[in-house]
Image 1 (cartoon, rainbow, N blue to C red):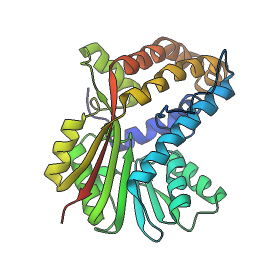
Image 2: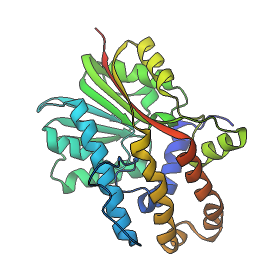
Image 3: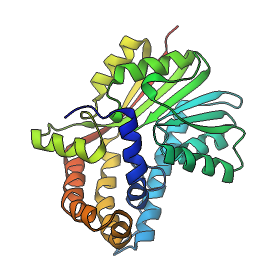
Length: 285
């Protein structure tokens, strides 16, 4: 399978962003299930499942905000920002200026609208940009994070080098992503790549640590979050089933027939074989 270009990944999200919006929550990243997140019992409605997923996502975003430790007046880069919910939140809570970059034009529009509604357009901005060739000047950010975006990059070392370039010395970079915890079969690899517009499987904590070290980052900590994130893969299929009519209206009959076949298999694969890691690093002098 050839590597999808940044443009192709952006077009993929422009096309299927609505599906993500209906099944993956407002933050477009996985959720962290801790005490107090799961409150639904019996047969919850689609809206109740959505609320639970949102709480789990917000819990993880809050943990990442704590790790970054952004201060008022500082500048931060969100690498692969999605539709901008975490971007806007860290800007609101920290008092810092935040720039979210994504290859999706639709996500840029959604992020800007979100910042405008929050009254933060003066400090929270969104741009369409390729993380492997950022247009920003060097050493202008105090921190950066990448939440489940690095899997899309065909040249991950290049993206890490770009993050390091735009960070000031001592700047913090937090990378959070899924990884292959149990080996995939060749057929599973193809299924996973096609479903998520990936050129290859997400790297694991050892590979990311090596890439970060080679680029000039010092690793401050690695945290495995696999257990806390597994309930996401159990909830999304139920949300998919509950919102099937809305999804079918959005994607059309033919695409829905494919989703009915593929989507449950992909989520079961993620549940059974994917782990989740968070790596905290700082730019060495």
